[in-house]
Image (cartoon, rainbow, N blue to C red; front, side):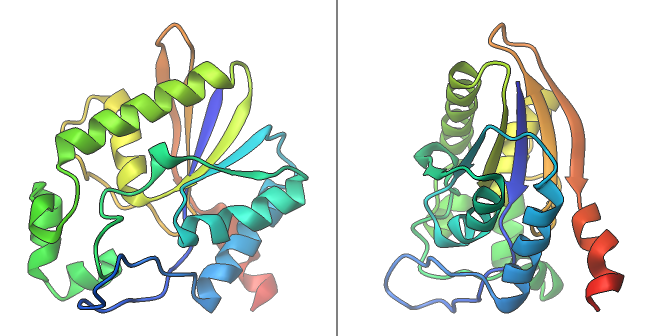
Length: 203
């Protein structure tokens, strides 16, 4: 079977101190990214669309499911490691400003900002991947989720120990082939053609 791992579109920024778990919706740019993604995937035979329960993932998965004529199914196993954080600062901002949270994120010190520990997160994602493979043999499934989930899922296949080793673009696609016998391979990484190929026409 094939899992098409999709990162959500660009979400709104939520500053620290909200006091509740941050669950941002997509920006206008993020909604446009999701629309282009859906149009690009319309020609593929996708049997199911799974989504993290967070809004930015559901908002990205919904136009994909609608154009394919299937329902979005939320799947708890592919939610991000920092789901309980009271803020959402885009990773590109954290990196550009050399924020201490960026260093903690890359080094796996996730407990410093109230997130799951990397080893717990990896075990959860590995279990989720196994569940998807077991449930959808011989099918193609789109799994709309988050950068951390995609890093760990693909890193487990490639033997990369770091929990975060690349930055998936917004609405990027990365493809994994997997069998119930345990054979796994990565077919593509960080596909963004749906944004580049349609940019000139849209602009």
